[in-house]
Amino acid sequence: MALDLAVRCDPRLIVPLDFPTVADARRAVGALDDAVAFYKVGLELFATGEGMDLARELKAKGKQVFLDWKLHDIGTTVQRSAAVLADSGCDFLTVHAEPQVLEAAVRGRGRSNLKILGVTVLTSLTDADLLEMGFSETARSLVERRIHHAMAAGADGVIASPHEAALARSIGGEGFLVVTPGVRPDWSARNDQARAATPAEALKAGASHIVCGRPITAANDPREAALRIAAEMAGA
Image 1: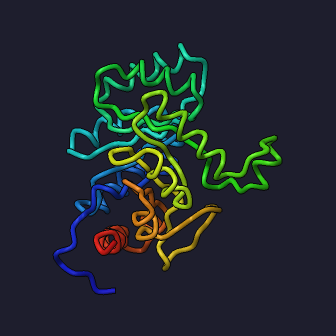
Image 2: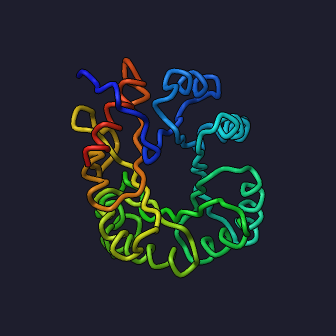
Image 3: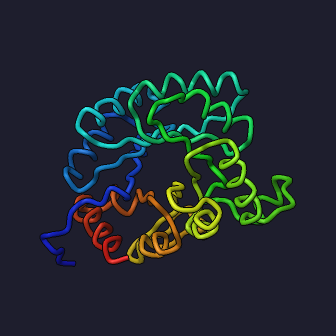
């Protein structure tokens, strides 16, 4: 596909650095160059012990950073963890969308600019999976309940699949962050995403940001793939 030379990175596109080592992540960032402005640092890099070092490096380069830690613990622990992460200068932090967890994270971030996002239902889960886990609700019903939890706690937004983006936007209103993983362009495989959509579909449904990983990072030319998705987003 020939790309318009005027296409630039889209700050609504978040690329996850899901790699086993920080060295691998740095190589990916180098390959993507100016095509990506926002990166997600998740548990895989956290487990290396160098995830926060990478996050600080990215911030020093002028990138935005989403810490996808999905905190889920007693309130005191979550509050203290959020307070530490608030001092890092990073932009987004995920916690599980349960009232005590959300409230603790909001207290912990204090007056910093760190945005707290509640994880509603993982995009790999189906209604059948939730039933097996003991939930009597559908994914959509559980997402709706957790959106209300996030708003009541003073969180800045939620993580929800593209299928629930419109619901999150209608409840949260303008300015509420709706970050949608499980985004796959038509030309890529869905992998383990059960409730996926294209970038354009997610944005039209109400997403403020989309997370798209393997179609970009596993591409033969990651930079071109990122710009191809940015072009699709611009068209939406």
